[in-house]
Image (cartoon, rainbow, N blue to C red; front, side):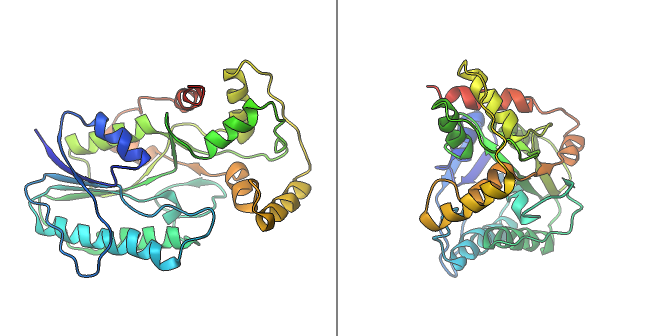
Length: 297
């Protein structure tokens, strides 16, 4: 039985990953950054590093908080991995380490240019991992997931669901966008495959196969509620002005949340699928449907 160390198990991804990997012996490692701390991994065979500081939509965090949690702590853990007998290190980074916006399709070949402290701190951790000499028999996997969702998720999809369930018309149908999502089941599937197989070290994007427009999501949600989708095409310029006002007044719709709902962000998963030689088990629409239906419970 493979022995694993997993950080960040209290978060959404960790709570789903633990039961998915129930056949393994798992040690839950609770970590926070402390200068000069030494981390001991003992007899574990693989490390899955989920812990980190997520992007703060309220902008209440200090910049150094991101660098401590996402870079310094990862550096300490990776140094411990290199000294240990563990063979595999799986680091959960983010597509935001590569780019905050995407004009075409995001691939692993893009030159990273993050604009936020969140993205920059994640990229610093990636670059540190890649820069260290890798002893024979060890592998690292830097995974860049796009927006992960699934039952129990309380993110933007849940907010969108509440909006539609109240019968409020969706006013952003004038925005033409395509966005990639990642089902939690597909995320867990990739992690397990990396643990069980010999896949080349490197950076891998994680996304479902197809991207969807936000207005398509609204339609899916409405259908799950047996409602007719109510899509309004309010002029884009007007919506952006209202979002700016919302940011000043701390209303639910602000410029950053508007961008989250309407930006195009298409992520290629070709590299990870080619490395695994397998298709992902859950389609984009199937995964979204499971998440949406969970909101009704």
